[in-house]
Image (tube, helix red, strand yellow):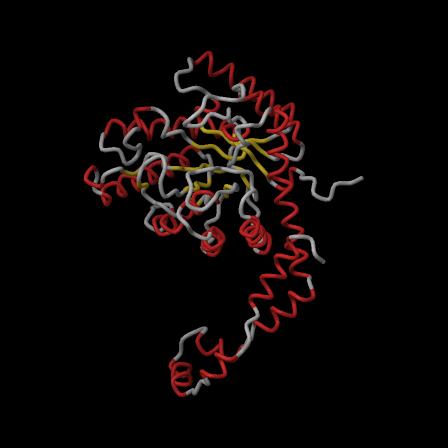
Length: 390
């Protein structure tokens, strides 16, 4: 029997080496799963079926202290696994947060030597990503922030970050890498306060860059939910600006630490409207599941976790199609929306005549306020569709 929700590589679903390779360790407990080599992680993804790509930080693939010989061996085994499984490298990034050298930031560090090292490390990581055909390069400033604002001038910190990105854009251009850069926001953790806390912060920041056309955003469900924000609205802002270059899908309880649950595992209605938005506006980029299995999972259950992320997306895609075709939803939307080309045309483009016409009009506030807006019924019908009530 055919599975209507079986993914294919055309869906552009991807996973990181650090996601399915997560060992189950947390701040209060030791690992519950064995550490896998990058090649073994790719082979695991090959068992999942339908995965398009794999992503990595530089040190997910090659340990920071690896010798040249060790590096070549790891890359050779990784390349063979990619060939075996027909999985592609979609995105690469740099680990600028784990090593103690970055304890006070990377590009925004108060130490000029640390800043220079961070740029060098990123250039080398960009070389590594390009070696395996990565198309997107993500920047997550995991230590770019403060615990006490007395430690840094935030204007100077932003200037340092801007200079680093301008330099790295030039490096990508000069090397012919053709990367799309995607900036990933987060409000806190591991720093008490992170610079560029939300997707909106980055959308504004991008406009100050020398090569703003090649820089977009990589919003993550969990990170916006940590800030108590509506992720769908953040993604909509990125889409509207033409800046959604990559997206991290997972799930998260509001107000908690960064949980990185399986996509759709917590807030199913938020996940539904996110999928609907991406499909309605024909987002064609990679959909990366930046999540990991529960600490209780064994290898078989990690595979189920990966399958579950993709399957949930595809089920919600079908639910979005049904929602749009549902007779009651269509009737409700027709009742709610009151279009008028003439009225919208008056303020859709300024002219003195349009302004004078608007100033001379009389509006019936009582009539406008009394028109029904059956949002309760619309939301209930949405819930029924999600729960399988036809």
